[in-house]
Length: 304
Image 1: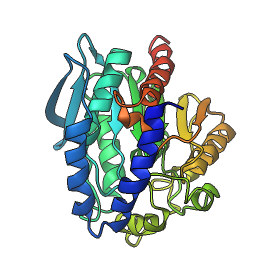
Image 2: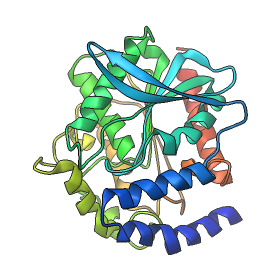
Image 3: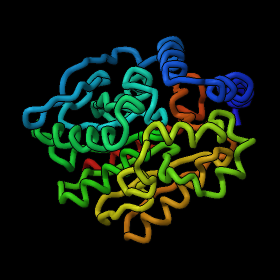
Image 4: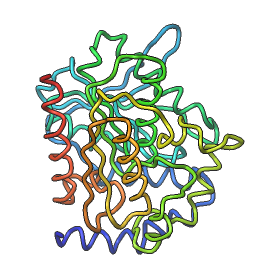
């Protein structure tokens, strides 16, 4: 463990987790995250961002693109940001995706999917399915698309894969998820066991956040909790989490569920890292290594 990681863990425990626990309204989470991302999360040099609309049929959805120098625009990482379905945005995550673009030679597309409580379930999963169809409509073959996400966005991307399977849409080249939220019943043992060791997520606030998204919907719906979804075996999946976070068992149980469906899963569990540590790229050496690991996993998928 690097000295920087030790320091960051202390900082997050003392300041970030209490701040999240105190938040009374979505804007109490949204605005600070946007400010922190702008101050601390930077893309590689010569990367660029652009914003345009994804279109499918008569509808559109806004998306941010993170594009590194020499990236191939015919190869796309379609990425869904985290934030408990309530906060976060393409802006908070696009620097990390610019770095991943540089590592893979792919462009990254971050849809601005609708957030709760203004837009509860099924808005997010509807937007995710729409975004995938819209990228396909740009004549990008499914075999050149990799899906990704983190935290709630990691759960969303796995739910999207379940919907792709259910709707018989073309399967993507692969799917990766960082510290995904896969079970909104919060029934994994780590949710209680790691309530003290998690330096980011306050376990006592999880149900409140979930209710903003669910409202009157049962959390067992596979479009909400992809641990209940059905999957095809041909799409390989990469999952990673920390052994100190409350969502650890969301990854472990999801891995077991996918393998029961014959899916090839690469699971990487690391020690004492914060939730979605990869977002701290260029700050933590462990974050840079985490992105290198998933980039190394992605590259062979596109040569098949």
